[in-house]
Image 1: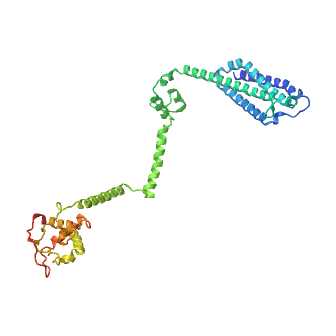
Image 2 (image 1 turned 180 degrees about the horizontal axis):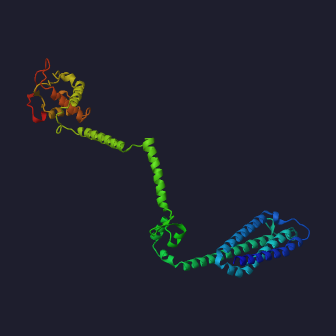
Length: 377
């Protein structure tokens, strides 16, 4: 088969050489003495470059067609040899004719002053005709290539009836087989390692791409994790995350307690006995109450706060209300805009804590006797 192909192609080659040899003198001697050529014209150069490029594409495509023909190459060469000879002859004639007209262009220009971008009409249309002819040949070759490929595809499908059921499977099955790189049974011979264990053959089957790339991604992730958590320490470990969560919960707890403390009013206030609260209340008393009630609570302008007599009630709720709203008609201002409910509860609890301390030179009792209630204990 190969020898027949070479013989056919060699015959074609010799035919082209003979035609070129016979027609070459026409282009060289027919013009007479050497004349200025139009090949230096920019438009002619561009058209010639296009012609040469199309010739290269045609040659490459013809080579591809010969390679794709394979089994039918003998029939293709026999059927197409005459056509190929005619095509090559026409190309050579057109190319030589373009050269001849390009050499005669000055004479034509002398007789007729009709040019296209400095190129005579004859030369321009000859070059354009060559390009048009090459495009037709290129389309014909593409059509033949398509026919050959369709025949090869049909031959393969008819030679492999076992593969037909696979094509009828759903798109998901085809996609699954593709991503896993599954091979058919007849392809296993190429990857058989020759090891047989109780009827189980060992194959050199490559792992699926998704598994390999997933494994590589895990290795990269492990390296980044090791560096970040154990080398650079730029992120907390699990026990550190636990401690951070506990600290955050404690801060939220304190904020909620503080918020709850500020919700105290004269109806919900309770007597505080924590030394910290009593100390905070004493500090407030020394700042705003000592001027009228003395630092020890014995009373000056204001009443004595250490005895059991009270002008406006002696319970912790009554004292809180007095501090919060004041008694402007008696000279005592309201402190609700200056202190939080928590601070006013601390102040009221401190005042209750100094009951019965008997400071020296206390002011005489004022108001009515108050008896301790359950809320004050």
